[in-house]
Image (cartoon, rainbow, N blue to C red; front, side, top):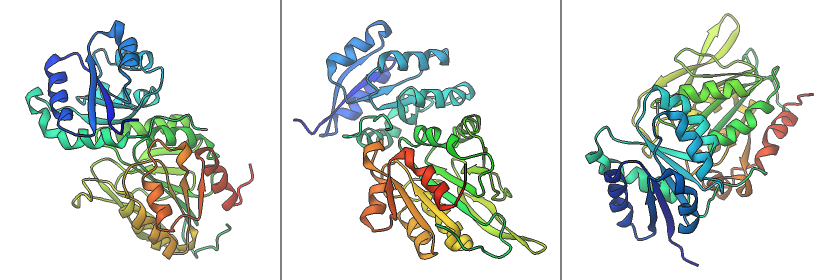
Length: 343
């Protein structure tokens, strides 16, 4: 069996398809097995090609892009959305992710500048290697005066939008803890993503802003392009963890990062924090989960069988920082058990 990754390109612009072929063909572990703009024959062409990964542009109108992906990707191949950003695109991104997309790369404004995203494209293609989309099959001591008493910190990357969409509705509306989330995602997309999660959730979900405070029954999603860290703010005898966004340099080309978020909030909550790492490539989250363990908190990670990419969670496990490794569907129920929440 070949170790090479077979890629099929879908784009209406022949010059873009040619440029993508040129970029990917220079990688020894990647083979471009086909490209097309003929929508009527796409599904058959993809099937014949033996593709492992799709790179797909989104045509106008945007609704057509979602419909196209659902039609041609019946086998749920990992799909990288490669398109230009606009308001309509941002609005429709989450449905595209639900249709099979697991990552996205912003197309340069000029087609001749496609080489500028070479590294990002190759990185995202390799992230799908051997990771086809799969069907997703403690008690705390009180910190005096801290409101809320407990927090859940979640980090995810490739495959995370779908994973978060699948679990966010499991948190009950009276969930007795705050939730903070870092999903690796460009700045143009996190607002709509948070809105989508809010639509699916019983709790309130919003994109974090400077000055937001951690509250029970509220999930704050780190905005793309900003690191999300926390300070303690005082109001009389009560203390709050307050969001402070910054544009410090990216870490590993990422901003926000899970490590910065977790490392910032762990000392505030101590043993009253649960850290969760979901699907994603790389090792962002290892430092953060270590900070949570050092503070006395508990740590959960998503297992390999339900992860799109078993990278971030695997690194936490390798570093002996995971208290429990669970399938995606078991993570929120376990959190509720830890917090002694009765449904």
